[in-house]
Image (cartoon, rainbow, N blue to C red; front, side):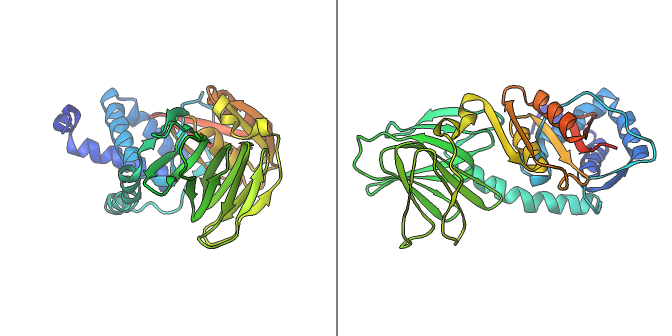
Amino acid sequence: MTDHEKSADPSLTQTARDWIMRLASGDISEAELAAYRRWAADPVHEATFQHELALWRSLGAIGDRLAPAAPLPAMKAAGRRRIRIRAGYAGAAIAACLAIMVAGPELVLRAQADHRTGVAVQSLTLPDGTRAVLDASSAIAVRYDGDQRLVELLRGRAWFDVAHGDRKPFRVAAIGGLVEDIGTAFVVGEENGNAEAAVTDGVIRVRSRKGAPWMTLRAGQRASWVEGGAPARVADIPASRVAAWREGDILLDDVAVRAAIREIARYRAGPTFVTGAVDGLPPVTAIVRAQRPDEGLEALAASARLEIINLPGGITIVRPAG
């Protein structure tokens, strides 16, 4: 138990948890936001809120509702407007059940992963000398044995520059599919049940399940698949743009606004909520520096007519302006 937990007022802790769930899953009014700001203005309240938020996020208690984000300048909102984040505020009892249900997968991931990243890209060397670069919010498990060098992509994206002094095949498993190196450097990523492989140099082959035919890919070529489905070719891109995030560039090429926000949010440290009808907005094309995600989000907001609201506790809300 930490010093904070030993000295914390149980009623204050519960209030902080209630505010977290209210902000995360309710239909919250401007009056409630004002009440939250007044409550969080007390340094003790703010410290308790931050402690509980960090704890819940570390356990995955809020799950996919929270994407990495960081505070941005506050913007005024009309008093009559309401911020619709998620439907249904169910109270502390249901919140506790939610924490248990969602924390499970995150704890399993932590137990499985040999390497995990937070909001920064990480380079590492695997036991055979293969160079790997993990994108932010990514995780892999290394399963080398006498028959093969297998890496399981558990979350996010990873790029590999394969060492070829070992005769055993180098393979990456993701969403039921398998990618095998044939002397190359390549990236494998997964998101929302969809996996993709792309080649920066050399040749790889991809199949969706054991016994299925292989698809061969060369530099600049890509393929995607879902679990149980055959891989399908995706439009080629210049090999220099494959896994551009390794060099700190977030490439958004005709990307839906919600996906663009999620991509930028990957590199930010606090929680962000996206609410409102953003799915109907035109797609965006931009290059954002991963080291300056706040600037990227502000530029996206300006070009896509979005409003960014900063709340105490490092919470940021993105919604259509107007």
